[in-house]
Image 1 (cartoon, rainbow, N blue to C red):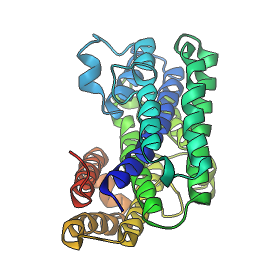
Image 2 (cartoon, rainbow, N blue to C red):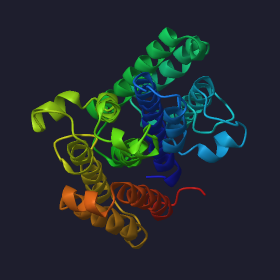
Image 3 (tube, rainbow, N blue to C red):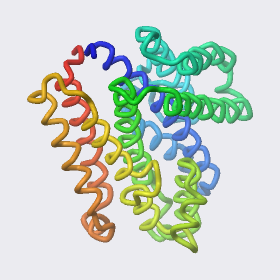
Length: 315
């Protein structure tokens, strides 16, 4: 398989997954903001910027994280390379470059999203339109992943799509869970209070995990159980351990032309998967959840770079 084809498929899936994550991140910021009762109304929007990895770029041109500015920057700003608008554009560019490697339904899912996106360009100033846009986008990404899972032959092309999807999802899950630690509660006594509770509930809502939480952890939403669900529960398809299990399986399934180049990426993926699989959530919490998640984000980024080197992606 050509390295260029593998690279296009990898980044096609990553940018589609990233667009979905940004939509979810904007939703959780809006939910958190709606339960805020103090005067510090911008902290949730600042947390969204931090969790998106766009802090440096955003504050280079903005003085504060105001709601309207953050929504515009993360969703529609063409100067932000990771905005939803650019994610859709880059996804289509990668899909067009490997058109013959995609099924017709995959191409239609990507191209149709690109075409329909033009109708939402004015959504940032209208709350109802924005909500409809974010729900539409999540549905389009689900369509793309659904047809790729159902239609593609289980060959290297499929493996690179899944590797891109789950590498991006692992990074996003860690960032989304860590977003709570970028939100400033009004005062220390509010930890465990009403605002704190609704912020954790908002995170569950954004990842579509409210029912999963009720099934696995009956009772009131607690931070330790939310962390366990998103880190170490293999049943939940957005957990870190689930993502890394998929990564190891698909990295192992690729027909290696240069095993000496790809061995390090497999070693890193298996090492982190073992760490997540046998992790104890009480040890993670006692050692510092924020520090743990920061480490996961860094290691996931390193794995992405190693995959690129091992499969000779263009630099």
